[in-house]
Image (cartoon, rainbow, N blue to C red; front, side, top):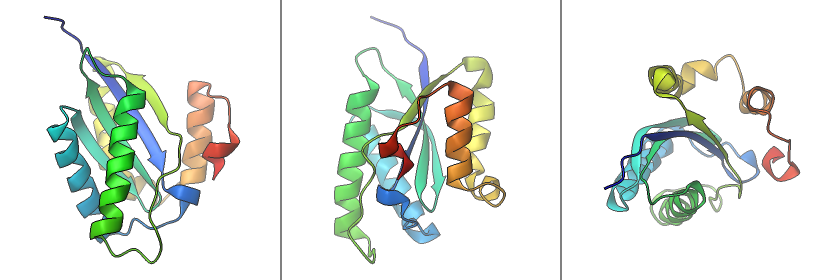
Length: 147
């Protein structure tokens, strides 16, 4: 048996960063993502977000990879959202995402950051957060993530 403890903080945005995730939709969608993930043995430790994006803390198993997990979560959740939620237009996610490893020593810091998205975004919008991620983690800025 392999033992792993790989924690990943993933962030992805709505298509064109449209602010479609009102509180009611957000809560239902995040509940569904958590339930769907569990059915696929994807371990979500924390999920939250704001009107145009999602933060998710994921514990990877030895046989999982981020590309597959993101494809499953984003693909199925957008399908479900369009079928079950009343958006003013077709709902979808942008193709790309951020994903960074999280050390065990920073687990609670990341959990709290994800839990407190509403208060965080009262002071900083997603574009500012996006730019901070680019700088902090040394990501090369790509046009498809910009919206």
